[in-house]
View 1: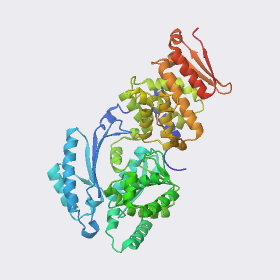
View 2: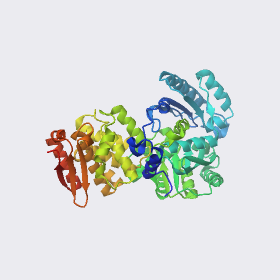
View 3: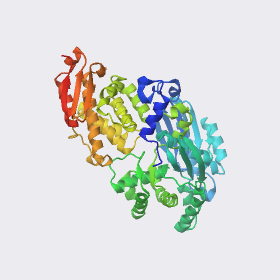
View 4: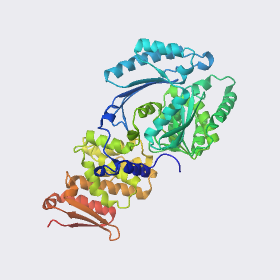
Length: 529
């Protein structure tokens, strides 16, 4: 199915790019410590939208950035625009105060570059240019007013930050506008279009629900003509879409409350929209933790989404936590950085920052690789990521380390991971520190996101890391080698040095036997006397 680039595509592309770096395998030399990535460790973006004003300061590995700072004020600049054609007076006052604060904060942390952009409300308002001049005079922030097409391009690039090589149609809804952008694959943004289908704009339409429904239908019919090829996947960007996705999770009882890469079918979306129509706003707020200001936009956004799904008929709908702000960061990157695997880059960065022995993850990966001889590239990248992350939570209390590892993997701000892959990675890291899931608070419902054979494989991976990490705390492959013979149902540890016999003590032997038991094979130890 056309959609996000798969793990196998990422791994194969990395291999093509990194032939000159065989030591690092198919993923190439880490880029987070290079001069280009270092220049992006404090990128501040201020996004002045129709409903909210937000500042994000990005930090860490640029290809999969951490959010050093993130603050949002729901100012409602676009409230009442349909009646007045001007920015909301109270919203302007709140926005100006927020922008003064954001400018001071960005200066305080040494953010560079500092990018300030405004979208539909400031773009379309009669007093938008005057507001821009006022902001510059009082804060020193020079606002770049984005066209609708440019806003669509940047939102699509934000999706690419999380899904390298994604294909489909990006739909970004704000307070006063909605943009569509085509992703062709390979990082290319194609056709783009903009509309006035933001909930704040729709609130101002006269004629009631029938008039709003007719307007949505007409505007969407015009909009989708720009995209004659119906997308197999629709990527949703924007706070109102995320609020609907939270409601969908609540209605379905979905066990993993992570919005990025959350997938819905058109049928599920239509059922959730009916659920929204039949449930009180206050009750929905209480169930999902959505703010009052956001929730009041949801019913109108839901009507837009219903019409969109019916007209485009996508096979799948995916939620992106990345959008315009991440697209601005993506804009700063070179092609080499854009095409790296965000999961592997982030895992490497985390290991370098937090592990007891940075660099050991590669050695561990080489040591346990023989246990997975038939692993395809998509699986090999997950195994590599697990090895890189196996020790980054070592400072957690020993009694809760397994849970912390699982939570970090499943809830981390990572791109390039499906929800099933998050659970796989989390399970592997849980079993790196604990032989079983009892007394860990593990939610068994999460296992529904993984086939049974993948659950077992993740446990084997965890036990393999548990043995390899303590057999020889430095360079285990220098002291021994693992051999797996599936037909014979044998797992052999060959001790390569006399020191290896000393290293293979009682605890190491117990963990090796536990690994063999999980694999349902016979454990054999040979060599070194």
